[in-house]
Length: 317
Image 1 (cartoon, rainbow, N blue to C red):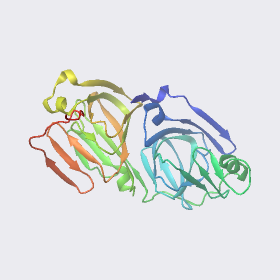
Image 2 (image 1 turned 120 degrees about the vertical axis):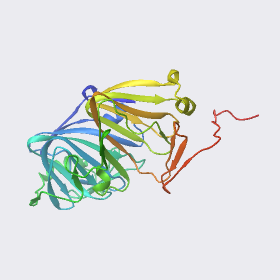
Image 3 (image 1 turned 180 degrees about the vertical axis):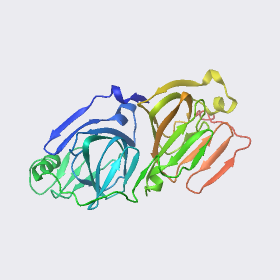
Image 4 (image 1 turned 60 degrees about the vertical axis):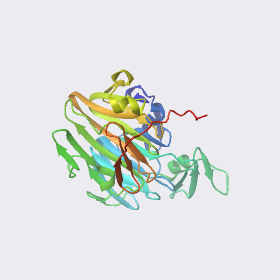
């Protein structure tokens, strides 16, 4: 449920123009349908082959450094704080600048996942089958053999790239700041939000999701994650039922869907800056036990429940 990126082993990749380390943070935190990797790319190297995900949307967030993001035949400068959206079938790649680049890569996990590598004319199927009429090297090795891609003239701006520090906030006030980055950059299937909670302030009220899985990454500061294992306990504020987990920079928190366990964040004395990533599932239903409200995402309707009876999961005789 919680893993810190400093404790996750790094996989080193050094092949031709590709030079980086990958940390599979989502796996370490126990994510299911979505994931997140931390990729540190060496100066003037690439994070991997140029490719297009044919059934998944990817969102990158730049933690530090700078580089060039290649997408659909164009190249764009990227820097710390940028959110980069790669929609389904967008051909893309990432090249580090002179000081390297450090990014988080969020994405969907599909049962049957296909990736197109246009420069070497193959389609790769996760977890490692290359679709080709002849036997030969895997797609990454073919990419290395093809040599480093030539980048076109670099543009400083793009509709699919926004920066957390410069884009207009959706909320800014005493509690902190909240920015729906990926939505503003054109994401359609998933979302990535940037949030800063002021010292001692809390985020969204305790809630749980029926169909949407979420990942949270703590960037700066710290605080606590509160879990309420039962909606009854959260409704009446039964402290004996509450579970509290300390959070610090680098922590990755996974919240799977359909658990009925409400979650809640509160910043510590230094405040807390974090990313919130999740699916945008129109079938999702959110329940807020403290206010007894339920939200149907697909139709945009929220209502307060009256005379609610909780189902303990045991069948009646």
